[in-house]
Structures are given as structure tokens and as C-alpha cells.
Amino acid sequence: MNQAGIDIDVQYAVSTDTMPDADSIRRWAASVLKSQAAPVELVIRIVDEAEMTALNRQYRGKDGPTNVLSFSSEMPPEVESAMIGDIVICAPVVMSECVLQNKEPDAHWAHLVIHGVLHLLGYEHDSDDEAQRMESVEVRLLGDLGFADPYREMA
Image (cartoon, rainbow, N blue to C red; front, side, top):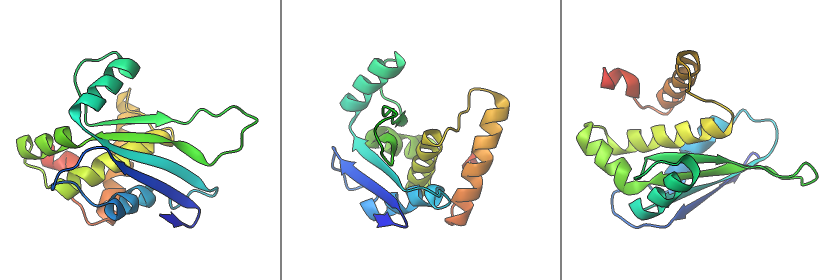
């Protein structure tokens, strides 16, 4: 997608029938980025458990796969780039969570895409205040897309 200065490359390193299409993933990510004044580029890569486990171990020191990781772009100051980073989503973990947590797949995928993009924009959830701020933005964006509050469903 290259709409209004937003360029989102969706890569599939795994193939299953239960993943959303690239246009849906781009739409969900663009919903977060639409208010950005400068051009923005990012990559969203859908992976298997082995690739996610390796990334989780290498970058977070944790064993096993996780659902989503965000990697902010760290370009040298002299390099002009619209690249804000990469998001990696583990398809088997996402689908397992949908089953275990009784979540609608598109809603859960949209939530994780939005969550990942927000991390690239500097949002964190290390403290209660940060988590509340990030969750409120997620809930608003998901609502704008027609999805229910994922935190209310968990209560």
C-alpha cells in the first residue's frame, strides 16, 4: 500500500488458510499511521514458530515464540529514510490464542497489528500508566475499524 505517504510491505514466511490477506493487514496498520505528517514505511512479516522463537531468544532473551515483536528502525542520522521499522507476527501463536481465548481471528490479528505499529511510534506498556495510554489508543482504533474492545472481552 502506498497511500498518502504510507508504504507497508507485508511478507508471508508461512502459509495457512487462517491468515488475513495483505490488504487487511495494510488497512489495520494504516489506521494507526494515517495522522503521520511525514511519509512512513514499515514491514510486517508473518512467520512460523521457529522464526519467532529465534527472534524472541536473540532480541529479548526469552525462549519460545510470542505473538508479536516490533523492531524500530535505527538509521544513522545522515541517512534519510521513512522506514520506522519492522513488525513480526507469529501466525501459529495468533491462531492458538484465538482458540484458547475465544477471540474472533480478524479482531485479534487487527489488534496485534495495531499494537505492533504503536510500539514503532513509541508507545510502551512497561508501567500501568503507559499500558493504560496504549490500550486506550488500541481500543479507539479497533472501534473505528468495527472491532470490539479486546480488553473488555478478557474481563
